[in-house]
Each structure stands twice: as structure tokens, then as C-alpha cells.
Length: 405
Image 1 (cartoon, rainbow, N blue to C red):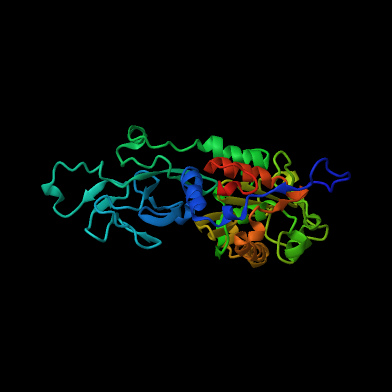
Image 2 (cartoon, rainbow, N blue to C red; image 1 turned 90 degrees about the vertical axis):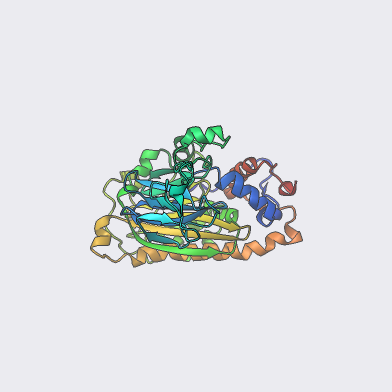
């Protein structure tokens, strides 16, 4: 969203503090983030269409847990912790595959796609073994916007135990999807229906790019939320959306604004030339506009009239983050093999420019010059709300040097 340049000076201080540099470097803080944020919240992990047939599975990492996401024959898409119930080996040892069952390669404990234990050496001589109780540990799953979302909170139950079993074991339940993810979208996009105009469930992946970014995940979110840097590092983007050059792009709460294309710009492409046909259900006010939202903790959604760009972040360490980015188009665009290269190239360049800036920032989070953090200018003040949220999630106080307490 864009807000107008200030006509009069702000009252009080113009600058707001950021967390100290240690918030972006310390292993203990990163551990708390994994435990209290990524392992307790809903994470978008993969496109539903990537698991088209029963038996197809992929492994993903959320927080410190590796998860198997599989399309079953009877129960749709399910997810499990990738841990054999016998001696703990990874059941799936590659990134993806297709199989009739899920079998551990250590002692051949074998699980149905629906999770229960179905075979193991000498299992018939152990009739007391409850095959449901020793099934794979389930992970909560939702499908929305054409993506599989998972939450490992409360994922302590066997395939038979379910929610009641989790409660008996004292495991925490997942947060309400409606009250967290969908409310987050409503807050950032105005209303869920506005996002649903783009029909993400029916779109197809035109291209996916994977980036290994040598920077803390919070630096990436902070970068995505502001455009104070846009005139400096995004020449192609500011040519297409001239108002971004003013530096006042934001995702401030209650300031829902679509950024307009330049007068001579035909579409959201690297050179402003024509793209593909517009998505059929977008509202008039969404035409020739770019919207961007963050869905905490790890999703960025960018919408333009003819496609959607969907980012997912996976923090690996305090100084490394994997980012996967999908470009989504109408099915006929993919089926007819229409040229989408100029559409993809624009945000690919934006990604590279942003990630390089984050990587150039990360080393200085360890500098004594950043012991007490930095500053947010007025066009970045909304990022302070993200910092406050972060501090509340991990149980610390926000402010200079707070991350060390």
C-alpha cells in the first residue's frame, strides 16, 4: 500500500528502534523462534497440484521437524512427522516420490498412506502391538488458496489417537486457521473475498524458483514490508509501478491500497509490455493494480491482474533462509504454453535484488555498531508492529538490546 508523503513534520521522534543485532544472529533466539512461531503456527508448504495422484508424497521442513505430505487413497492429503516409530529413522529419505506404502529403509517397518502400521518383520508374532498406536505421528493439514498448510502444534497423536489423544498427552492444539491465517489475510488485504477474486485454487504453477538466502528470516520479512529501498535497488519495478519510487510503499494495518501501474505500462512484466489475459473474477478496482500482503509467519502473496506470485519461507538457521516462489497463472496459459518469461523475470529480479540486500545486511548484525539495533524511518513505522508481534511470540521485550535479555 502507498501512503502520501507527509505534508507536515511528525510530532515526537521520527525514528523508531529495531531489535538489537543479536536478534538476527543468536542460536538461542533462533531456537525459540522455531519452537514458538514456526512450530506453533500454520505454514504453507506446497501446492496441492504437486500431489495429484494417490501415493505421491513430498517431504518439507517446518521449524525443526521434517514432515511427509502425501495424497492418500482414502483420506485426501495427510501429513506425518517423518520419523519411524521403531527406532526413529527417517521414513522418506528423498525429497519426493510415489509409492503404495511408506516404508522405513532401516528395519522395513511399513505404513499405509493413511498412516497406520501395516507390516514389519515378525509383526504377526507380536499380536499385542496396536498398529494404529504405532502408526506415523499425524500433523494437522488444511488446504486453502490451492496450497497445503500444515501445523505441527499438537502433532503428538498416533493415527488413531487424533485430537483426543493429543489432549490426553498434554500436546498443544493448533491455532484456529480461520482466526489466524484467514484473519491475517483480512487484516492485510481488506477482506478474504478480495483475495479470492484472484481464484488461487484454480490457478496453475507456471514456474517455481528456489532461493538460498544467507540472511535471517526477519530481515527478509522487513524488506518485503517496505519500499523505502525501492528507488535504490529496484529499477525495473519502479518503472512498472512509478509510485514505488517515492519510498512510501507499506503494508500498514488498515491502509489497504493497490499500487497503480504506470500510464504507459501494459502489464506486470520486466519491460512493461503486455502479459497474458487478466484473471476473470478480479474486481474493477483490482485492474492495473499490484497488491502485496504478508501472512505471518512465512508467506508473501503478490497479486496483479493476470497472475499471482506466492512466496514461502523456510528458516534454516539464524543466518540462512530458503525461499520458494511460485508464479501462478490461469490453466489455459500453462496448457497453451504461452510466454510467461517476462512476467516471471520481473519478480525474479526483484527477489534477487532484495535477497542481495538482505545478505549484505546480515553480517553486520554481529557488528558492535549494531549492538543496540538500528532505526525505522516514518515510512517503515509499520514494521515496528511486526517486531512487537515477534517479541510477544518468543516471550521477550521489544526495544534496543531486548533480544539479549
